[in-house]
Image 1 (cartoon, rainbow, N blue to C red):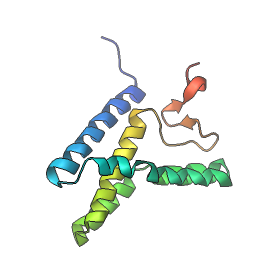
Image 2: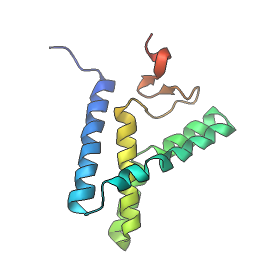
Image 3: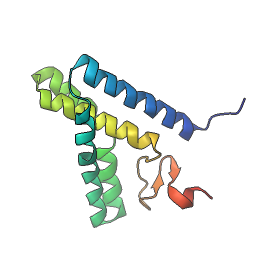
Length: 126
């Protein structure tokens, strides 16, 4: 049996997280599934940090693409009960999971295409 690489393992895991978020969004909270898609690109605004260079860009992108944010937002929901915070947390977690499933990982500071999952695009095909 072929050994699964750690990057492939994380991609499979991320698909499972994305599916789980959809189930929780619709099943447990009763939100419409389309909220996950409507909010999807909002979290990519963190990539605007690249306008200030690769180090700042990577730091802001990684902050916006870490599961810490959705977990903190879910905790705020648990304390305050604000539905807008919970759907934001779910959409944020869905975005991160979908990105990682597609091979978009946390960014290294040298190049946008260099992620913790390896190089993206043609450079990664080498």
